[in-house]
Length: 308
Image 1 (cartoon, rainbow, N blue to C red):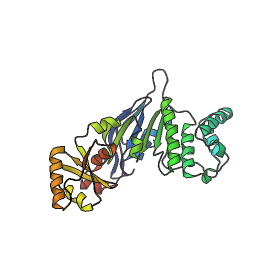
Image 2 (cartoon, rainbow, N blue to C red):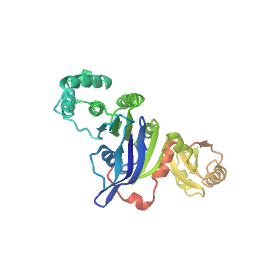
Image 3 (tube, rainbow, N blue to C red):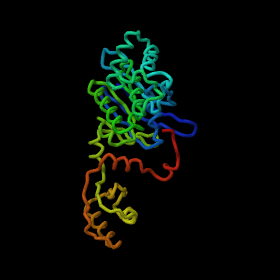
Image 4 (cartoon, one colour):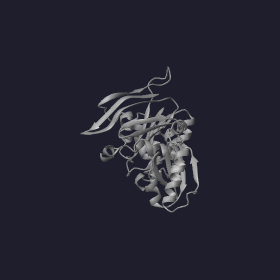
């Protein structure tokens, strides 16, 4: 459906996207994940044709005999007309797409019912809640029935109920065969995708299904229940410990080998005057653990900044 090949984009001295290459197959739900400044928004805007790349190409291809697929783009920031009603915004976009009045009425009604915005069709867009604005932006991106949807953080900044409703719509579209590429800062959303691309400092650092990414991790995770900050600082310096991260009332300790790590952790706890028999539970790496490992980088990398 869409192929990104060697894509590069800079803003002055800042390289926002660096030689990114990947494919999104027809019917795929691809999540682009990365920290703030990773280049997610720039990459989606390049894929949508809103920015010209400095190098590389974006190729669109539909199944044989169907021609070039239509793209729909939902930006991260609400960009529709606040003084117009929900219905007026959709009718205006329909006219811009060259649809007839009857086509616009039929299509907009179907989309408003799907997004549960039909009862609010006469409300000014500026008066909508954050969740409703996101659903209206999604409705606008669907008006011309695109085969490919590019969505920039569709679930960000909305209440949990609206976020769940937006994902229900996205999953319905995915099941209907549409190809979706979306960025998200939420790893629970990334877990819902068929494939996940990790972007860091403008580079693609990992790509695969959520299960593949977790299984290919070269480390294991031990969970230690403790609220002591001293424990976290001490364990992070042990031989064979790759990193230590706090998760609620526990620490997730990424280690190279379980057996030696258990012995060293027990000795360190004893030196701190704590019970060395505190339970160490072995866990399989999660996407969150993978994300932390992939985005650690070095001090020089973290010092810079890039557009998101």
